[in-house]
Length: 267
View 1 (cartoon, rainbow, N blue to C red):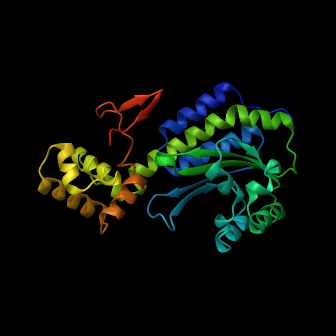
View 2 (view 1 turned 90 degrees about the vertical axis):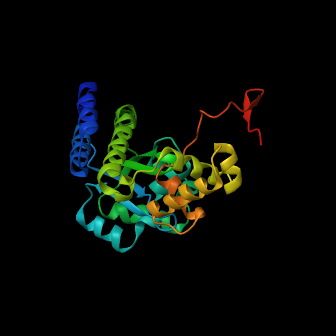
View 3 (view 1 turned 30 degrees about the vertical axis):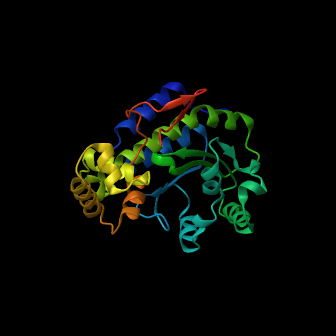
């Protein structure tokens, strides 16, 4: 099976994704990519970092309406094998190569049987990573039964991995700007530093010593963070800080000890 996509096509698509300002624009580029690679549908799914226990999800897809309705009504997102796979894997995989280890319980295996009955017979999924290890997945789906022609798989692997990365980056950018009002609340550098050390298990006094500021200043910054994030305690603040990427690895502290190529903390 010959496909029509070229490197120039990929460059054009990724350029448009880099400039996309809405999820609709991203969807259109995904549809175009499917047309060029001779896939019939696409699906992008990622958790929205608003809660740890039951996060909302960003879903963009071109699936048939009947499948979308079933997916939502039956809460199939809980047993979606592509998401289960993406949580613990980093490499693309064709659906027919998912093993029982990937599929989990019988509900996940039932997922593919239901999908096939709606014309989603085969596909390839690309796990994606966002800030602080958050997971997403882009799938290219075909009406044709598995296994997919090797030429089609090769094209998907050659062009799809880079395309999926641009899709994910575009979604995260739009999400940060437009879909999460809390992100618009400015968290100062000092507040982030205080929150980082809370995440490291430091007390107010210890944070004050590390940052060389007064105890009451640490308390002031942490209370400000609680207010801005709309949370009740420091534990929640750390959790939300991780989800919102306010807490990240710092490489600009005093160099730690090093032993045989491995960095060790002083404490």
